[in-house]
Each structure stands twice: as structure tokens, then as C-alpha cells.
Amino acid sequence: MNDVLIVGGGPVGLLLAGELRLAGADPLVLEAADGSVRRKRSFGLRGINGRTSQSLRLRGLTEVLREAQSAMFDALAVKGEADDTDVARGLLHQMKRNRARGHFGGLPLIEEESEVRPGAAGGFILEQPVLERILADWAGGLGVRIRTNSEVVDIVQEDSAVRAVLADGRTERAAYLVGCDGGRSVVRKRSGIAFPGTDATMTGRIASAELADPGAVRSSMHGPGGLVNLSLVPGEISTIEFDGGPGDRDAPLTAAEMQASIRRAGGIDVTVTRLDDGIRYSDNTRQAVTYRQGRVLLAGDSAHVHSPIGGQGLNLGLQDAMNLGWKLGLVVRGAAPESLLDTYTAERHPVGERVLRNTRAQVALMRPGPQGAALREVLAETLEIPAAKRHFIAMANGVDVDYAPDSGHPLVGRFAPVPVMSEDGRALLVGGSEEIRAAVNGRVRVVEDDVDPDAFLVRPDGYVAWAASDGGTTGLSEALELVAGPGGTRV
Ligand SMILES: Cc1cc2nc3c(=O)[nH]c(=O)nc-3n(C[C@H](O)[C@H](O)[C@H](O)COP(=O)(O)OP(=O)(O)OC[C@H]3O[C@@H](n4cnc5c(N)ncnc54)[C@H](O)[C@@H]3O)c2cc1C
Image 1 (cartoon, rainbow, N blue to C red):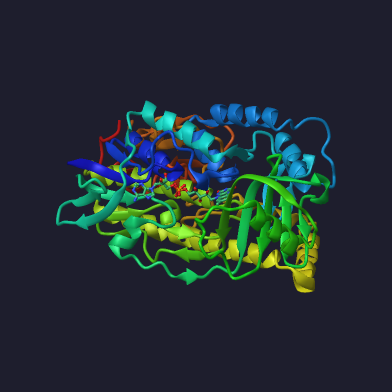
Image 2 (tube, rainbow, N blue to C red; image 1 turned 90 degrees about the vertical axis):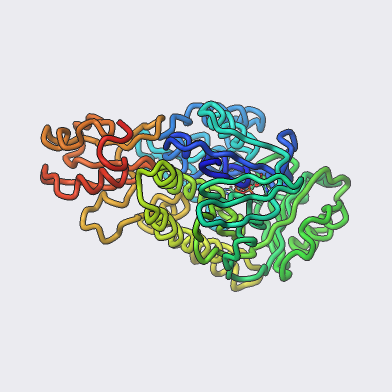
């Protein structure tokens, strides 16, 4: 029997698989697609936000991400000065200078030179297949088993195991199963986990297309029916229309449809002469009521869907994987009680709820008409206030997450306040007196820190589980048991 089955080898499934390996479990990833297929849903670029960059830095992946991003900048020819009228390319230039911090409903979040902290984990921007390749190489290097052409069509929970039924009739059993199978998750549906939320109000289209008059479209053109935008990738055009949502999202996007959409949304008389590829998306916004039901768990888009405006879904899902990996690893190894898994929903569901809220707000911000325009102007003014801008940057980058707001210590529940590395996924003790180090007794790695007066214990996912400013050890042994299992394990 397997330790854990992961259904779906997208970015979230791959990161979770690697995290489980680091935590000492042996997961099997079941991926429906053929490994060589470039999946349509991966169209366009993906922003890796500040918190996800910190998580991937923890695992030593910064350099490979930076190289991939540089290659992309070269390919997109991001050179010289940005043209002020081109919002998308302006953002790329600011990314290159590590000043861009994403956008909120199309309003760029840019730090001034003086606001950029040295060594700050800025974000990355990559094509999703490139990120997936990086994660697949990393997980493969850790010994993760990935089986492609393995579509799961049903799951059955038994007393001491869970069974996945594949399309070809094969079955696989495991102690736990995690659905990382995207927004239309079979795992979520077959396990009967409710997925309440709000229906689509808009249709987004992104196409790789050629126009008879390329100069007719600029980036961020708000028109009578919505928005027309030039994407960061030359030749990619996107539209947003507030039309009640796409009917059949999977029907092929045609040049005629894209032309009609640009005309309606932007009020521009254009002719689309060629369309190579394209997708539709919506603001269908839903969240699973629980991320765990017995031996079945959900992570990534299978647990939450929302509009991609503001670039948050992938980041949210990757953070789910970081949170779940070490916990499920400890439980599978018998080093923690099953109840540790309930902290996964308890910690991640509220974070998901906040992202759903802020993506709904971003959709509202894009509405056409005088009210939408006024809202954008008011918010643009607000973003000139430094504290407000910091708030939006923190929200867009997931760095305001606090898993223990009532802990009584400002560090506990927050991400490690100094850059730390744990390529092998072990928990860390940062700083601390001789007494504290003795109490830890080799169960976690000790990291020197001359700067911070506090001693703190960092969970495998980078969040602080325990901290003391007074040199004391109150609560340390419970926290150690939480992050490293009962005494003696993971030395
Ligand atoms: C246009 C657009 C732009 C976006 N931009 C951003 C951005 O900038 N930043 C950001 O954070 N997010 C962004 N997102 C969202 C992001 O793409 C998703 O949140 C992310 O792909 C979710 O990852 P996942 O692994 O959970 O699911 P998916 O990427 O959907 O992967 C699911 C995997 O499961 C497999 N699978 C599905 N069903 C089965 C089955 N039954 N059996 C076996 N395997 C199965 C699929 O083949 C797939 O490989 C964007 C989305 C869109 C559409």
C-alpha cells in the first residue's frame, strides 16, 4: 500500500509530493495527462508572489527560478526603458529591477527604490510549464514517483485506507489521498465535499492573435463593455467582458469570437486576422467547506477557485502544499496524531477566504462604466498613501498571513523574519541561549543568528511555531513535538 496518493501532477501536486518526500513519506503522483502535453490551462505567464518566493528559497530553488526568469526576460526582449503608455511592459521592467509587487485589479503595485529592502524576496514571473518543469525536476530528484496517463475517475474511502480507481480500471490504495486535480476536481466531487460560492459574472479571453492594425490596441484599455489588454507576452491580447460568464469554456476560441470580444469590450474597430491559441476563464468563485474529509484532503484549485485577476491562485495552492506536506508526512510516519491534519483546514481555509474576497474586489474594480472608473480612481489615490500601498502589497504577496494571531508573541504564526534555508525540510531553531540549544538536543537544526534578539523555532514550512524574547523555554518542548514529532525523530 502507498503512503499517500496525490491526484494531479500540476504545480501544487508536484510541490506537495516533494514536501512529503522531505518529511519521510513515499507519495505516488497520478497525473491524467501525458507528460509531453502542454496543457491549455497553462496559457500565459504566472506571477510567483513574495511569500511563495520565500518558500521556494527555503528549499534552495531561488537560483533556478532566477535563471528561468532571466531567460524569459531575454526572450521577451525586456531591454532599455519602458514605454509609459504600456502598463504590461512597464511592469516587466519594474520586475527586472525587483520593484514590482504585482497588481490589484490592474493597478500596478510598485515599490519606490527607497522602499525595496535589500535581499527582499521579490516575486518571479514565469510560464507555468517552466515552473512545473522546475518542480518536477526537484521532486524527481527527491525520489518522487510520478505516473502520467493515469486519470482517476473515482475514490473510495475504507476503514484503514483510501482507494483510487483509474480510468483504465486499475486501482491504487494508500493511507491518505490528496486531490490536487484542479478546479473541476474529481476527488472533491467524489468525496462529496461541498463547494459553495458565487457564479461567474464575467468572461476573460486570452489569445495569441494577429491584428490587421496592431497599433489599435494598447494595454489596459477600459471600454464600454469591459477591458482590452496587451499581455506581457508579445502577440497576446486579452479581454474581459461582464456578460454573465462563458457558456462552454472548453469550446475552441476563434478569431471571429476574439474580434467580436475586442470590439464589444473596448469599443475598438479591429480585425483579427489570425488566432493561434486561446483560452477563456471566469470569476466563478468557490471554496471547499473543508480541506479534509477522513483520509481525503484537497489542495490548490481543487479546494478553491476564483478569477485569476491579480495572480493569486497558484500561489495560494503552493502555500497549501507547504502547509500540508510536513504535517501529512509526520502523520503517515506515525510521528504525529491524525488531529494534526485538522490544523491544515484551520490554517489554510481562512487564508483562502481572504483571497476569494480580494479577487472578487478586483473583479468589481474592473467593471465598465462611470462607477467602475470612479472606483479605480479612488483606489489609485489611496495607493499613493504609503501605509495603504504596503497593505495592498502585503495582501497581494501573501506576506500578511498569520496562523496564530492570538499567540501573544509577534513572531509566532508568522513566516521566519530572517531568510532561512532548509533544503532537507527540517525544522530550525534560530538563535537562542545555550539552555535553549540544549533543550532542543539535536532534534532540529540550529541556525546562528546574531541580529535578532529572539530565539525562534521554524516549522518545516517556514512559519514560526515558538519564540521567546526572554531566553526562557516555556512551551518549547510542545512546539518541538509539533514540528519534529516525539523526541528523537528526525535527528
Ligand atoms: C489566465 C490565467 C492566469 C493565471 N495567472 C496566475 C498568476 O499569475 N498567479 C497565480 O498565482 N495564479 C494564476 N493563475 C491560477 C493558476 O494557474 C492555478 O491556480 C494553478 O494552475 C492551480 O494549480 P493546481 O496544481 O492546483 O491545479 P492545475 O494547474 O489545474 O493542475 C491540476 C492537474 O491535475 C491533473 N488532473 C485533473 N484531473 C485529474 C484526474 N481526474 N486524475 C489525474 N489527474 C488529474 C491535470 O491534468 C493537471 O495536471 C492563473 C490562471 C489562469 C487561467
